[in-house]
Every structure is written in structure tokens, then in C-alpha cells.
Image (cartoon, rainbow, N blue to C red; front, side, top):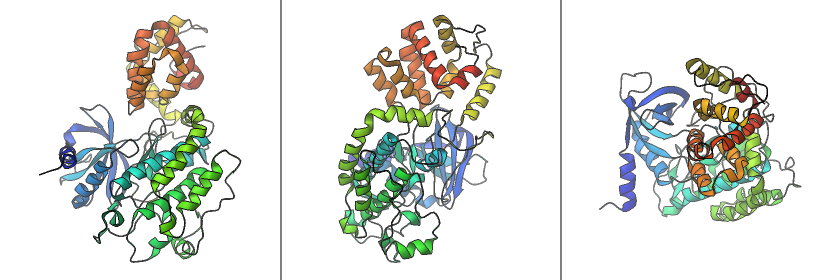
Length: 452
């Protein structure tokens, strides 16, 4: 007889998504595992990531692993794909349908910022990754490929662990000699014991990788950037680790974070902590910076952020900065130029809905008309919704705040903001929203014809 957990898993695994249910396919990445696309599910009404696998025999095992660890800090699996794919390939293909993360990965964030994120966000990322990895280990799974490109970010820059292509059932957890497969993942994040041919991954592998990941988050860099595999393989077992000279210990909590790094990357796997130990540290550190998290997210996520040194993406294409072909889920980097392009197209098709005000100074009524008239465009273009909700303050009831925050995508958050706050709040709250929008997204407001 199936257990309750097995019945729930079977139900999820039987959720088939066929090709006729998907549209707007966009290529994301490809490699030895197969190919990843973004697609819109016609019935669900939101985008998903579809991972089409070259080897269909690995499908159930990988999807099972992802479903077993489905939680707030692990990428969600929606079901199994069966169909012909976006290009109408002659043979039937199989894959995994997962949630699509629009903010990319921690690696993408580091590249965009050319350095580490604001400290409140850095400490939150450290804590959320520890929570996700602890949950994974409690399910007797080892990730074996924990690195910045496999930590994805949602609209509010919360972390979700992704890419279980290298996950294996933990031999230490099951206390058996069953085969676990070869150690995989990026060599820069591999522990010293993993460089031996006979090594089989256990939980201590992930703990070591987490220590290197913490260093990468705190510095905004990749470890050993100029070292080849053979050099890393030689020196890591000898005790070499990333340099700590660039970390500013004057920031509150960084000394403790550095101590945690050292503990995690200890050369002796038996001396490394468990993720429950890591959580005790990271939760305390994040609590010291939690008050600044909304401002940190706003500064990083706003479309016209001055923290980015990257060239704008004017092509309107989806891009991926995967380090290896196995970085399965990459994200659409939506710059302010992409948003402007979207707005131009929207204006062309819905000029009657877009309200342009000719006066220099707008009344509250004009602002409310602007918010109502540009509803569809604003739902699509505004991303950091919770920052706006915070600025609306007492205009948003606490219960409504929780409902809006619980939504997975910015579009869902914006739709509920219109439904639960703007509609009952009338002109006053719409005018307040317009003022926030004018301050935070001036290019967007000007493009839509708004004034001061």
C-alpha cells in the first residue's frame, strides 16, 4: 500500500503538461542534460520553465527528487511534459515543468551589480539557502552542485535552490552502500575529499559548497578565478581556500559569517557543521539587518538602478549566464529598455486604454485616471510590488498585505493590488500609488504620458 507521501507524489507526477497547453516558447539554455525553455501555459495563465531531457530515463528520478523537496526555498515542480516541443520535433519528447524565476540567479545578480548585494540582502540569501539545503538534507538528498548559478531569485529576490540534475540519495542518510553516482558540480565548490576517484557524495559535500557560496555572496566574486581544474585539485586538499582579505569585517555580523565559512569548508568533513547549525547562525545574523531588507531589495531590483554596470539589453532577447551546460534554469533579464519596448507595443495596441495628461501638474483625479487607464501595462511592467505596498503604509490592511505577499509572481501581486487596494481605496490610494510610481519608475511614467 502506498504511503500518504507516495500517493501525493504519484498525483503530482501524473500531472501531465502536453505541448498543446503551452505557447510563446523561448529558448533559455542547453547542454548535456537537454534544453530549457520558457513557455506560457494557456490554462494557468503564467510562465513556466520546461526542461526537455535528452535522456528520458532520468526524468522520473529527477522530478521525484524535486517534488520531495518542494518548499518555499526550493524550486517548485508542476508536472511532467510530454509532446513535440516548440520546434515540432519528429519524435515525442519528455521533460519537467517547473516554476520560472524572473530575477535570474545569484550569479546573474553578482554580474549585474559587479559586486556583492547590499548586506541585508546578502544575509537573507545566506539564511534562505541554508533553510532550503536543510530541508533537502532532511529528505535524505544531497544536491552536489550548490553554487551561485543554482540559487535562483524570485521577483522579491528571495532565494530558491535549483538544478537537481546531480542530486543523489545520501548514503550517509540511508546508511547503505547503494550507488550514488559520481561527484559532480563545479570544481571550485567541491570539497577536498571529492577529488579522489572513489568518492561518493554525502551531506558534508553540500556543507563545504555552502561555505564557498557564502564567500561568493559576501564578495560578489567567483573563487579561484585564474586557477584551472588541475591547480584547484592539487591545492584544495592542501588547505587552500578563497582569500578573506576583501571582506569588510566592520559590517555587523560579517565576522560571524566568516567564522561560519571557515567551519563549513574545514578540510575534515567530520568537523563541518550540519545545516541546522548553519541556520542558527544565519537566522541571528539576518535578524540584525532585517529592517533594511525592503530598501535593499528596492535598490537592487528597480529598473533604473544605478548599481548595475552592465550594458543594457536592447535586443529584447532572453539571455543566460550559466557557468556550465547543466545550469538548467536561467532567467529573463528584464532591463529598463525591455520594459520600454514592451510599453511601446502596448501603446500601439491599446491607445484607448492609455491616458495621456497634457497639463504639467496632475490632480489626484488625473492620477487615478492614469492608474486605471494603464492597468494592463503597469501589471506587466512593475516588478518590485512589495516595496510599493510598504510605501503605501496604512492604506494596505495587514491581512491584505499578507495575501498580496503570498503570490508567486509580480503580475499576480499587481492584479491583487488593483483588486483589493485600488478599487476599494478610490482616488486617494490611486494617487498615492501614482506618486510612488513617479518617484521609483520615472521612465515608465513618462513613457505612459504621466506628469508631475
